[in-house]
Image (cartoon, rainbow, N blue to C red):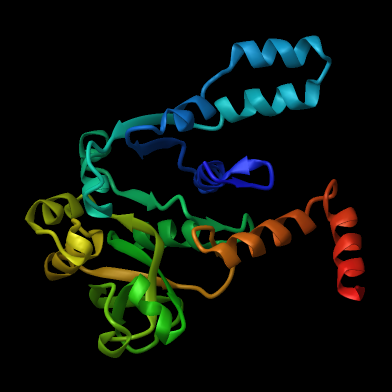
Length: 261
């Protein structure tokens, strides 16, 4: 629910899913996160207040949020890791391929990454991971992928390792917070044991999945903000605000004046 300009980060993620044709959304929540459910629900009291005040634009925005998609919620009773979070959605997902989108990774609305991953998954009938080169010293914060020699944007993933030390990383190709997965991942999740950080890691399940079926990566370089990183959060705020017609001109003028000072 971290606000990015005037919307919480989770709304950017849901809007990205909708742009890619994914309108059946499952949000994995936990204790103390009821505000997330409230955000995507109707707020009749607030709507009535906006209507009475004649704030029709704001009213339309409120209604549109509730109509974005069919949003469902499942609760992760304990914070046992991303792999565990994905596993609790199994009954909802069933035997269909699905996308996993992490709430602290925001993609620019012009980014084709998720749409391209979905297309690649449908073409190959396989899982597809988002991959991005990071600085060697940053790879310990991610899963690191070993891939076949460069064959363009789509590459065959041969192995993945969760949060390796920089000296042990097989590459600086990081698994970023977008996944398109086949339902086979659930059986792999059933077989993993606690890994890095004592958590059930999705990366470890993907490593097992690779043994049973092909897994691919979609490589990209631009359009992603890690809003869990303070500098990236500030960059996202400034870049996205500059693009808005209501905020861009005055913000640009302020930044130019600030630089002169």
